[in-house]
Image: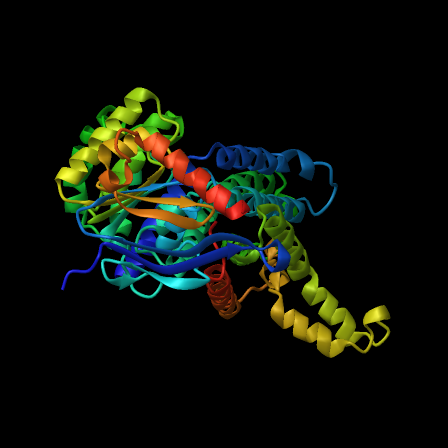
Length: 272
Length: 249
């Protein structure tokens, strides 16, 4: 119980620090403008305006979330080490796993707040476009699916955040941690596509015959493409509650595993 | 059974590996009794901060053991009984002084009620009452140092470990911190602090340890160290020069 309380206090202070950071609001304002640009962008198309609007709105939220993870989140983590702020925390009876989990939850809370603000901004612009061009509203369009797609995007950001915490736990330089996290994100985003190409196509170039290796890699890296539900939201396609729950469980368990590994690696680190 | 407040036995620590290995500490042993004010002296790069980081388990020793109030560092929890002030205290820039102390108190296992009573008292003691609701990012070096001191004291620890507590402070700031250490000494706290400001050591410490290039050159009473008619500065320079000559020979 005491351990959970310490995690909560660390999460709360990390969230407060992040929320008061100018960088957060600069990114959020930029993204709000981007979602509003939806109004202009959709008019460039002559058909499927509703689908363009939904995809553009959700993409803006996803892009902003990544900026927040890679720049604000990793900056807060790196500042702890580079500026020796971590000494203030670890000179208290706080274990490494409590520290990392507290930081992770605090940053996930910032991402949730940003996703809610940007989601509302995107929804407003989408609502306006769909009202303006009622003829282009996708058949079976559902706001519930849009909200579920937005939650999936947040879950994907949470997994990327956990990846960043893992990279931060063993990299000696914050820049290296950032590079590793961005690379892992790119691999995670495209791993499923690569797996399908190699498994389903015997003429898959240099990777032909390496199906097992690719499948093994697809189990190691996070399958971030699973969380991409923009297409379903834009086309009003079925998106079952069961799939949503499974995605939530996948994100939680994968993040927990990454945090566990991060704790093991961080314990070996010397805080000189 | 009373344990020494701090006990260090045959401590060795090096950085790097192979031929590039730099031995930061060699066979360091120290014992500090409860209620003592112990000054840890040495030139820059002598190994003072490394010893403190080993005491707090930020670094792991290559050899030897460290105990604080009878608890083995790295194996048993002891941190709720120590207060630590680093040479350059760094806090969350966007939290206020009050929020910073609240976080530290909570992480030390204090109840909200106890913290609410303690924070105003500490802020007043450190002349920070008016800055309680200001964000720490806007604090001067002296204010941060005083906040660091309040942060180390928030949970009323028995042992205080200060790394260069007066470094970079103006004369007023130094005077304040010196006064505070003297008050804490009166309260019976054990204080272990590193410094290379010899006048501060002379004014505050019961015993001193002198370290140079990772080797402990002297540990004992301050009065015993001072040669009759010669000040601490001369005695300190003399012992360092002798050690350098011996290492070249």
